[in-house]
Image (cartoon, rainbow, N blue to C red; front, side):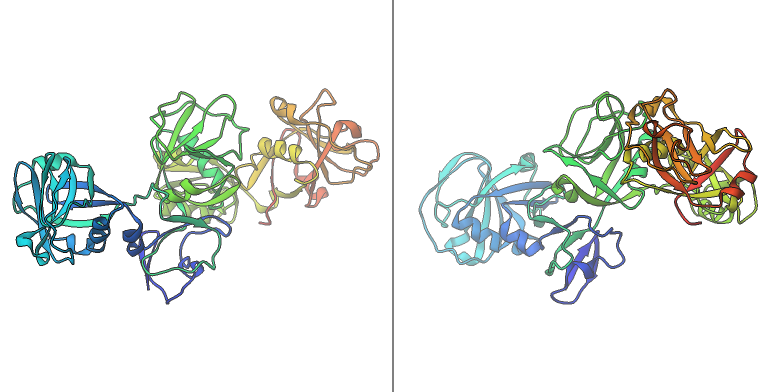
Length: 505
C-alpha cells in the first residue's frame, strides 16, 4: 500500500504499522505523530470540496441530502467536466452518468445553490448546475439540492462556455483538525492513502537571532515539550529564566512561533493555532512550515519532534578538526583561537548564536586541551533549584561545556571558590543541611548567608563547613567534581577560567 510520510510517498506492506512508516524519518521516541485519513475516506466524510477550474477555485459545501450522496459518489467523474452552457440564471457542467430517475418536480433554487439536471430527461447525460440567480424551475431531476458554493463565488461572473473543471478534491487543509488523529502508539495500523507527519518543521526568522536561538536551544535534542495549550496556541514553558531582547514583532498568523520578551512568562515559546494581532511582548521567532496538525491537536504535557531551518550551529564540545568540518558543511569559515591543534576541544564559540554566525559567515572557535575540561555530576533530584542556578551561571543550560571563573584559591585552603551571579541568587532557597561535606562536593551559598550565589568545590572532608566555607544551613550541595582534584589544583590559578562538563569526552 502507499502512504505519505512527511510529504514523501512510501510503499509499505499491507497492514503495516506506524512504526514501519517512521524508518528514515526524523522522529523522537514518545513524541506525537499526526495521521491523516486516506483520500478515499475524506471523500466519504468531508462536507466541503474544492472545485479547481481554469478560472480559479471555488468551494462547495454539501447538504445532508440524497443528491449530495450521489454527488459525493461521483467526485471522480467531476474532473475534466466542461461548462456546457450558461444563462443569466445558471451554469451547467457536464455531462456524466447517474442513476437519478426522471422527475419533473419544480425546485426552488437560491443564488449559489448546486443541483442536478437531466439533459433530454436522460440520466446518462446528467449535469451539475450552479444557480446564478434565485429562481424556480424543473430540470428533470426533482427538487433536491446538492449543496451551495461558499467560497470563490466571484468566479461565476467570469466563467465562459468551454471552461474546464480541472480537479475536485475534499477540502481538508493542513490547519484543519478534521480527519486527523495524533498518537504515540507505533503499533497503530495504517491504511492505503494515509498521510503521516512525524515532526514539526520550523523556519526561523533571521531578524530575531536571540529568539531563534531560544527555540533552537529548547529543541536541541530534536524535540520540544508542550507544557500547555489553549484554543489559540501551544506553549513551551521549559525555560523562563532568561533575558530577551526586543526583536521583530508581527501579526501572529496561524503557525507563527513567538517568544515572550518581557513580563510574566518571559522566555515562553508560543506556536499559534489561530490568528492573533501583533503584541509588543512577543518576538516573532519563525513559522511552522509543516506538521501543523501535530501542534493543533497536541495536549498539555506532551512532546513534539522538531526540525528547524536552519539547524543549530554550535561547535562547543567538538575538536577543532571536527568543528572545521562541521562549519565547512554549513558554509561558515573557522578561525581557530586558543589551542589550535586538531584534537583540542572547543569550549567557546564567537558568535555563539546561530543566526549571527550564519550571517557573519565565520566564527572563532576557542579550544583547550582535553585534560583542561573537568567532568562533574549534578544532582538534579536532590537540589533542582541549585543545579538550575549552576547551569545558568556556567552556560551548561544551553551547551555541553560550561565555564567558571576562580574567585579565590591558595595553597592549603580546604576549598576553591568561584564567581557566581548575585542577581540570580534569589532562587537559592536553603536545602536540608549536609551532615558531612566530602572532598569533591560542589556547592553554592544559599539565601541564608550574605554571599548567596558563591560557588565552591570542597577539597577535604568536613562535618562543619561546605564547599564555599559556609556552615550547613548556608550551603546547598548540588553535585560532585568527578576528575582528579590534585591535577586540577596543579593546573589552576587564581582568577583563571575553568571548563566543566557532565559528558565523557
